[in-house]
Image 1: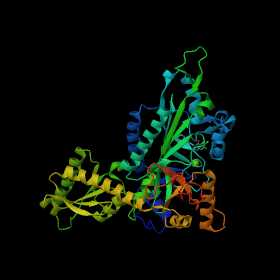
Image 2 (image 1 turned 90 degrees about the horizontal axis):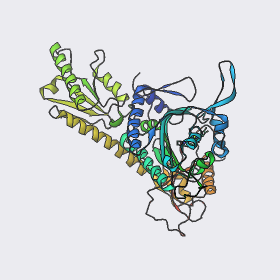
Image 3 (image 1 turned 180 degrees about the vertical axis):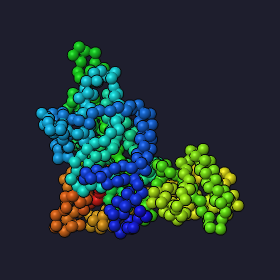
Image 4 (image 1 turned 30 degrees about the vertical axis):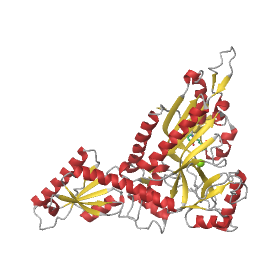
Amino acid sequence: KGGIDVSKDVDFPRWYQQVLTRSDMLEYYDVSGCYIVRPLAYFVWQQIQEFFDAGIRSLGVKNCYFPMFVSSKVLEREKDHIEGFAPEVAWVTRAGSTELAEPIAIRPTSETVMYPYFAKWIRSHRDLPLKINQWCSVVRWEFKNPQPFLRTREFLWQEGHCAYMTEKEAMVEVYDVLTLYRRIYEELLAVPVIEGEKSSKEKFAGGVATTTVEGFIAATGRGIQGATSHYLGQNFSKMFNIVVQDPEDSGADRPKLHVHQTSWGLSTRTIGVMVMTHGDDQGLVMPPRVAETQVIIIPCGLTAKHSDEDRRAVSDACLNVEARLRAVGVRAESDLRELYTPGQKFNHWEVRGVPLRVEIGPKDLEKNSVLTARRDTFAKAPMSLDGLESSVQLMLLTIQNDMLAKARKTFDERVKIVLDWSEFVPVLNSKCLALIPWCEREVCEDQIKTRSSRDSLGDEPEDEKAPSMGAKSLCLPSKQPTNPPIVHGETKCIQCGENAKRYALFGRSY
Ligand SMILES: O=C1CCCN[C@@H]1CCCn1cnc2cc(F)c(F)cc2c1=O
Ligand SMILES: [Mg+2]
């Protein structure tokens, strides 16, 4: 298979499928909504795991593992937590030809699996704080059209679940984890995100407050939820009776205090966002931090007139450069395959997104230099073999920073402050997000969704399976615009005219 034969801005869904399959990141599978995560993509997930595990370890969180099966009586323990989600729950009803007495659910998330045991393990304030995380897969039988990595029926994620004595401690952790999520996107995946809070309509119904990092897919102009960190308050501890005796009160029948909880999750959706953000018409573009192969070394400039010792000299030089780079921790590979021309090798590694190519030929050896080619900008530059290690390391760092800067510039350009409703849908139609002075009322959010959908589609009904044309609130950004400022009591919500509280980021989304 060659490169990509469809342009990213001509047929984005087909482009995305080709990039993923022709870069060997992913393989389609015969169960709808399920995909095979191949080694190149799994390497990215492992880099994310290593970074996040180190981050949560420093927060005192420990990894563990709970069963994937949830009994129906436990899963349905709390109606309002599960009600809207029931259609997504997958059930095991028989083993072989034997019907199960009670159907068993496959976890869509693990609150109801874990929290009965939190109640058992947490008796005294000395058992607090309890901070655990698990890396696992979850199953949600979504009906919307599946999208590799972005919306799949099974996905890999981590889910953290913590219990504290006080709201204050819990809230500190909610934001500490949100920072780790932002750093995963920005420092590993070179993807800019906007931190903020979810609206009452968009937050996790079982919690008190949801914080989020929101991404942006420029190709479609849609926002995408990147990861979430919730403050659950005492909702679940009241539901599951997770209580401790008040340490301040030494009385006999000391009052029971419900613990304050958090939960937070990030999934393999991260990989899809990275591919969509950086990919181009030659294929995948990998940020060096998560690239399995950071540097590919290719022998060039050898023609029929060159002798065997010329060839050997070039091959040895490639292997020597590879060894020097590996010695300083750069993930370098030489491609000495005989049956492929340099051009075919260039395509092979370009579609796989290798950040930096090093070309070595007889002329280069004479000049004690090599030729480098960046995958992100295609810029070519000679590089001396003297001090090669630090030059390559600097080049990889520059690529990483430039990829983030370029994506952030695009994101910033596509966020428009909208102060009049008449501009709202035109801004969406120009593949942008709208930052609007907003009242934060749920009924107003419903109206915005309805009006923006109708203004986009006329009166024809929406296709339930396709991404909606209506706008939803993505978040209330932590960084609020100051120009123009929102003057409380004066600035009005652009949709309903009520007093605006904060700027809210609205847009079509995944
Ligand atoms: O978002 C997170 C972070 C990790 C731990 N869980 C929270 C809330 C998950 C919200 N959620 C999300 N999706 C669900 C799908 C279901 F089928 C279902 F039964 C329940 C849920 C559900 O509770
Ligand atoms: Mg969902």
